[in-house]
Image (cartoon, rainbow, N blue to C red):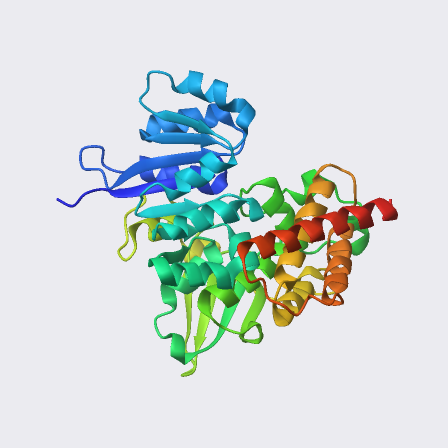
Length: 394
């Protein structure tokens, strides 16, 4: 009998983390497949403590230093070690593990993801912003340590599952539901509230990624991530609107074949694939696809006039260097402002585009970030300029 696979989950209380824990909870307790090493969370101390106790994790870390006392009290007598602070989260990512689920949202996940890469683990990657901002640097680090990236975004995981002949690929096709504003007018989008933007028709996700889905920036970031993950140029990546979210992505080969991965919208499927790779595992509770019941699968081209985030993402990845970092930083700052009701929905793409243009017109824009510190410097500049522009526009 083989030893259980050691798993750490970064962002254990978010949608990715809870789905990963659900997959692990379904294992045979008498012959466990997985052993949980570390769990981290940003600020939900009660949920983190419950998950750590239930999964018998060795250590649980909360990013918010001020919550350490609460976490320590909740874990007293359980055998789970408590830790707090951003460095503690990085340390958890660096604990010896076979698989590290990188589920922290935004560039905040970059440092922990890098720590996991340094220890040579398999990275079950949901934190697309890390790859968007530092893809070449992370890949170089992984080449040195032997770490592997196993994408668990449903779109990239779908490509990973059917990408068996990379040299014969003509193009990749990412699918998008279109989000809650797929058929909305520009006027209704201008008046959209955070609640409306977060009301995704097919997926249950956190606030930031839900807003990104509504603006289609999420798909733009996924395009950039695919460029770095699969070493393919952006002009060989298409994006299709597919409202049913049944086909998660496709790979077109040079013999005319197009391979797709299908399934109902449920993150447990791609997560289980990454956890069990190179094998597969049964996932009880995941609803099985019934094509007769579905009845039809629809596809359409995205409207880049109503959703300019797609064009901005192509512009950023084509420019390369630090442009994707500036794009992501500006978008993160603008989304946070929208969620705080300080700016309108359409202002997210507008100010992100303005910041990207300003960055591309600076003298240092042609220099690729040589270090992770360079990445953070560009990110902080983009956030500052975004907030300055939003204040001037208010």
